[in-house]
Image (cartoon, rainbow, N blue to C red; front, side):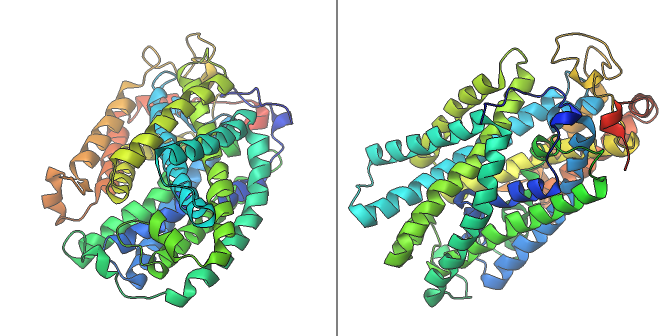
Length: 477
């Protein structure tokens, strides 16, 4: 299979041969990995019991999916990725806001997936063959995972789609075996090792788990969904079908692995760490399936994240090819893996990462969705590519390529979110207004969206509703 040459340029309709089933395969197969499973461990590590943990994950995932899934329709219409598509609202240069947000999201999740997958692999190989858990072992395992991940990401969308189809079946079977393996020691009570509720009370802790473990899953896809739907033709597939496929793919692709993580956290008594207890509590017969899940699953998920990172860097640096951009960001991701392994506490690092990225990413997504509604899904696909061609002009040029009102709205929303966030090592000053409950994503999205509506009433609306696109992008079926 040849290496994909296309970056963030407009995909011709003749090449848009994927369908809703392919979208579901990617969203399911790529998420059945330890990098997503470990988020199900967060609620038990916060001190919640089984039912409270499950309810927080389900509530956060459902709410996040309802909000995130419509973004898939943007790239269905523009035939390019979401950060480039956001140029309709932020300007063809201002869309760099989305590229940076997407780059940070994908970077963090890529590093997390390789980090956790590598830790479990070293633990399993230690039990099977006596591999020492030292720096050299971790370095070799991380390097092998990274090399396989880079290979898949560089080859591009078609290879990653084929991998996801296989993983959606294979990883499901491995998770079913995992339920059997950890069932004998499963308990529904809160884990004593967690030391009680992390935030001192049930509801503040439950809300933290809802955001950190549940909502963060769909939010991670706010810039990724367009990487897949740009290969789906609106001429052959309706918006409703694509939206339903996105909903189902996100719900199943996130709830299945995360609830497995919650189940195994209680079954392995994993209160303060996940990888170590998961391996220690595994029966011998499940070690090989666990090794396969840690390796193959991690490569599938990290490959898609790294692919998205390459597209975002390609959008920031148009002269760089997608393949070179992918290799460049892979080096940065590996640095983050080693820093995470040696310098960070897993629970604190994961919680801080997802809450901060949710706070700054949500207002960008809200502004992009408001623009989609305003222009009724009609975009000028050629005008969105002005920055990539290193030219000037077009209806999305605004002021020197920037829609200042949109950028200010995003910055204000993100700033409010950061002031309202509750991290293990930091509490924003606005928490006193919310009773100590982390509502950062709600406040950042609401403030950013409201500011955008007020600042762009009239001028920006006229600009957005002028959008027209090529027939294959805008045809309604």
